[in-house]
Image (cartoon, rainbow, N blue to C red; front, side, top):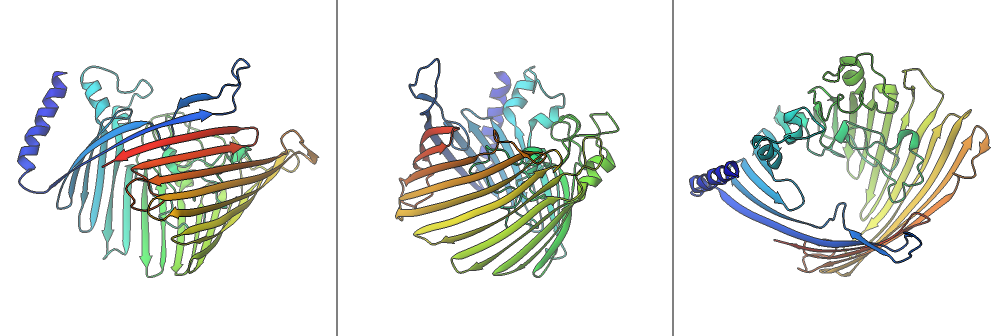
Length: 445
């Protein structure tokens, strides 16, 4: 308790020092919501279950205070159900960086407690963000280094991703299911990410921009982290294959297996209204291609991802087919929007377990009151065909459908679809899997 009072006293003194220059700002938010399962059977009781609202929009309250002077930014955030954290940022003329720490764990550790029962590495557990970047040669060269990165998903060498099945790199890159890519539970989750999608990973990235052309390389795991690197994930879950390592030192990353093989090389051509992007993940020769074109309010795109030379857990080649191709078309105006995502996925060894998946996910949105009220509905239709060799697996081959209508009210009247202060209602029905209602009330300043 004494240590916390000392910290608060330091913050108060710092406030007096900085009060003469710079700009202070306050922010706060409250979210109160509920999650109702309308189709659950507990001991033959069919009474719907009212539970805790979680996920992206969860019951919580937050308060933040920040100070800015020139390119310097200092912030502290308090969350009722989240951690107490602090950030330091600097945005210079040609370089920037950000450092963020979990202060609640820091205070607990200083007081003699354990930072994290699951981590022996003190710094990893406290680190929320730690990255920096340089802009060189008048912005032609971008160099970014991260121990725990910002979210760069879709930022480098990426276009349409409906045909992609890579997850973001919070764990330095994991495939969406990989051998479970044809999962029956992928409803409302057609699109994945490209290989350069990292959020909270560690890497070195270099990108060269020349007019409409940009290309570069991303090298992961170069700044080893026990919690976020290879050591804390049972030998690093390799991109498309099971783990295999010839060196069992969990405090080290192998230069060839964990770093060089997982390099991503990318290129993008952006000549509006058209763009094209391509990436190669060196491990198992995985490739991504994506492109899009716009005609006013109409946008169309397509993409492909495939593992050209898959290997098994021992690094031996397999005869599997692992690929996905997809596309999208959308028409969006200020009043309404509509579109469709569709894809085909193929996974498995034709002589063993294998399957295909065809998916269609249309959406529609309408701003009933342009300043306040938006209605939106998503639908999903997925056709799974699973085989054991040439024999069809009728138990796992089925059609899955889903429907998700949503209604959002912006209390402040600052635009339909945004509701930092407002009410959101979402109903989700997925065949034989989900029948739920979510209601969320938000307040913010």
